[in-house]
Image 1 (spheres, one colour):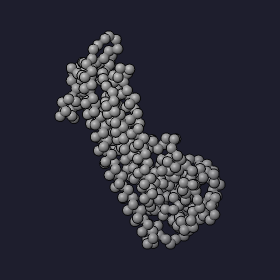
Image 2 (cartoon, rainbow, N blue to C red):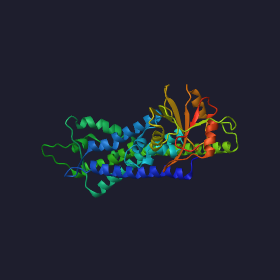
Image 3 (cartoon, rainbow, N blue to C red):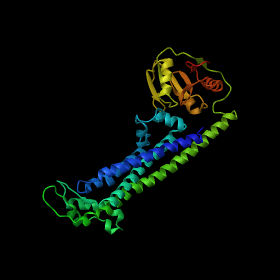
Image 4 (cartoon, helix red, strand yellow):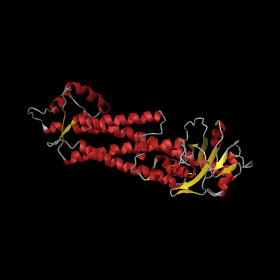
Length: 371
């Protein structure tokens, strides 16, 4: 069952990611908008940083949401090799989020939106610091583009803030802001500084506002899924204690195997982290192939070993899945924590033997552990 400690962990890591994203946005904007030796900032770079990159990130988030993908910015961040081992995506998501696919997806989407929003906040803070501490001149250079080419694009982008006339671009302002590397031209510094209003409105419109809305929706979705997970876990415990579990208590006990001694395929139903898989490899030899929960396991002449969480009660979902497999195999219940694999309690072992006894030909595997 999900505990307050787990809930604290699932909120602590997003906070850390948010702080890192804020610092990254702050640093990137200071570098991008540092300007040349005369303090001039290229307006086209500003559009890239404040409009096009945020829009691309939003579209990617919406695409992953529509496709219901478990991958995203948060998943990619967790997959970086710089984190401690127990923060590996499979270990973290399996141990902290109760194995619920919907809860994991909601958590990943929430963290991704938090990271995107904090990047925008850091970028805005850096932009305000630049405006307060320096005299910024916004100019633009292009070999192919002319002011007449840019003005319709900028006016289209500025439609959401038509109520702010000072932040609207114009052809005259673009012509006065165009800079050439060769040839002397005189620019009015007060005119070149007027672009800050357009930049501020663009960043709020295309980054902070939509990211903020998506962050609120993602947080509400995660909290809803979390409450549903708590209710589901509570019902499972009550049903188990009342003796009316989905798996009937009476029945034959499955055979207990302590040695495998033949090639096998491993189905990581528990979504356990790499240390658990390494432990199995040490005890039984390396698997011919390893599959994660949700992946199709092909028919094979090799034995099938299904890794499950030994401390959780067997559920009907697993029973239904095993009954669809064309061949019998081994159910491997393991108990582990951050220190490693530990012996399974006799009560949990009996429960899993009783569960597996309903499956013809299946056995319970306990390698290296006393029966």
